[in-house]
Image (cartoon, rainbow, N blue to C red; front, side, top):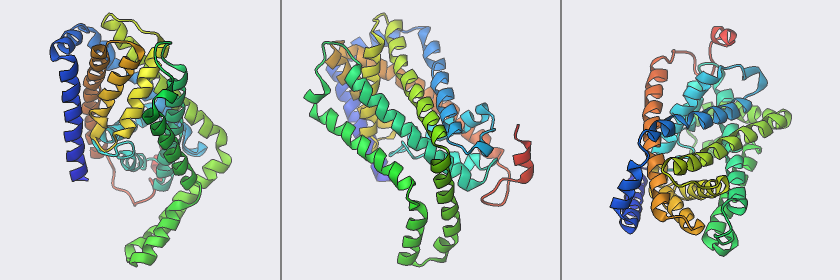
Length: 337
């Protein structure tokens, strides 16, 4: 993983360097300077999708565990998303951390199942956001997605991968994998994990059988979170003096997210994410300089919130009580409002 991270960073840095040389650093610096006091708005704006996505996660909890305060859940989620951003294959890199932190309040198999279900719902929301954004977003200047085979293939692969992930969640895959590994390796530790993996599969299975409406609600909340992120593009364009339509912002946001997913080998999709903005702006007939500038401004905002996430991780980890592995104490569960 260290090698993958290093190679990913190098490739991403080379792409960013190429894009900056392509459009000219002077032009980018001029555009970055135009934002001025607007950086404060860009820094604060992510609170919108942080709360929307947190609401989506809470919908992925079983009803009896869904009374955890939204603010506390948002802190846990932000800490986990920070590691998602910093690690290669980061779309799932911080999920175990979320489950561990949440296990202060609920059994660990319940916290883990909620994280996996929420990730499935967020992924479905991502496919809808990207697919609909590429089809209905943009303007009359850009060509149809059918004229860009690489983009279409990337969307198809993304959809196929997420569909496979959701199907595996419903097939008791964790306990089956545990039994297979135990039969292959025969290590006693693996046998001890079988009960925990079975409990995790049971929790996921019960949710998908009895919580279909909650899963749909989670998808809708996460979809709203993705769309709020796209509107950030329109806000930044407006503040640097170049208004765009919300559909164009949707298209740019969709291209950027698709490129970032393709670039999972690189932490935070460095290079590919910026390339998505550059390519989308070019396809819409907007200056690529502005597209890349918006991407770099969003990176500044991301660095700020990653620092907040690391501080929250330190704070939550420091406050982590010592309890028997797997379950929170009865007093903690009873203390939930």
